[in-house]
Length: 253
Length: 351
Image 1 (cartoon, rainbow over the protein chains, first blue to last red):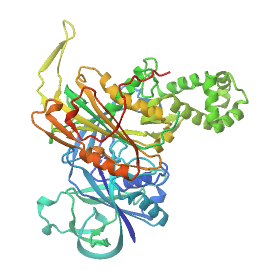
Image 2: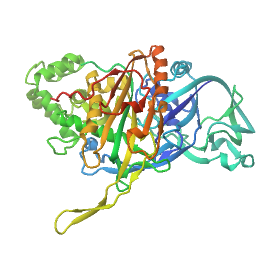
Image 3: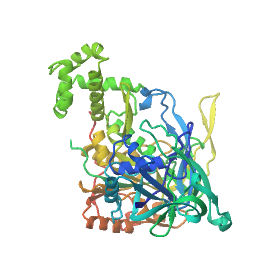
Image 4: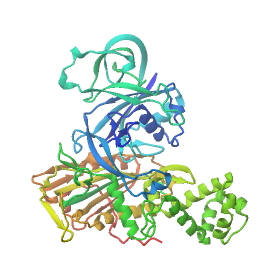
């Protein structure tokens, strides 16, 4: 199966946790739904009309955090919107919302770096994506919006687009996994093979899929194990995807 | 008025000497910081506010604002914009000429009246209010005139709710949070007592930085511009407002801020892309303590090389730039060649 991989990079990100309300907390990695939005944006798709086209059944996405990140809390003075008439800031008070920003260890010298792998069953979409992502220049292309890491103002960029072959396999096996690991498919982390200094593992429940009404589907949430320091994690898993290069990834499902 | 048809990447650098370039309301209004690396952060909202305030002073109506210095809900704002359009038959005729679909709808709803639009519209408003055709017309009409009337929507986008139908426009101009290109030091603040009157006084602290050279990165997107109606004239207004808006914000905490440079890579209309955050190509060296621009060297050589590559491939239409006339330019090293813009040139007055 053909897989397109690329790096999504930036200086700052905010992937808002869907349940956060009075504060805007962030996931450490772009959720699958966010990545679908970024991909659909690159392809020039209209806002809110592509959710079915990128459902879990037809589009597979894997992600890895490649550079160490940290969180930084900032209060943002947002508009208080209780009814639609307040959208222009006419409400008496503003809402001071604590916002979690994802930034590199050092924002001046470092970057946030996610590696994304995509396979779409529709060959036409894969070809379109290839046209956009495999550029061979320092820049990236987009038929729609510019790339934002989570929110529109967290501007980022894309680099290193590549095409690889991969093969899905179902067998219980121990291997080093390059991407984040869905807990559903995880038998165990091989902790004895890990030295503490190199790993910073967290578990996050992230959104995977919306229906056309922007509601999370029944299978639309998944727990993922993420290595915040980047690099592969030795694990025993139920299924995986072997890439041409000999490395292993797992789709967010 | 030509719609924007080229993408841009831009870089905006300013210096802040003995100022607080963006206070955090949750931290006694101390400058926003990443304390681990002593880097000061400045939000995109701060830049947009400067631009909005400046354009407002120049007489441009803006959306996130007040009407005659009173905060009014969005519907009132819409009504005001709507009525001022309806009252101006020249503007209405132009709108219909540009928008044949709207003209047809108007004819079928209001008949073939080509004058006195306001009375015809308001006269029939009550009867038509519930009609599906009218709601559809009204939606398009309001969206269209709002985009024409309010420059901040054309630049930065907005969430709008017209007659109960809400739509979100992503702004063609996006500005990333700025950060200082070097570590900064906070000035130790002593408590200040302000005496309000004989019985009352307040105690507070003023938090400031010794010096920061802050850089924002941003993009302008031709596809989003098509949706909000941002024009080439708007782009010119934006560039100037970014520079002049920062200079015009002379409050106590913002005195000492100066725009230093603006660089913009304007891509060819056929090129559907961006380089992405230009700040990753900058290199900064410094000697501490950093108290002024002269204590820093900002090297653009990598950016210059990348732009040369992009130009060689034919993606770049032009590189535009501006520098503060009194900045010590010899500390901005190897800047890419650019066509100079005069961003201090006066901005024309709005309506």
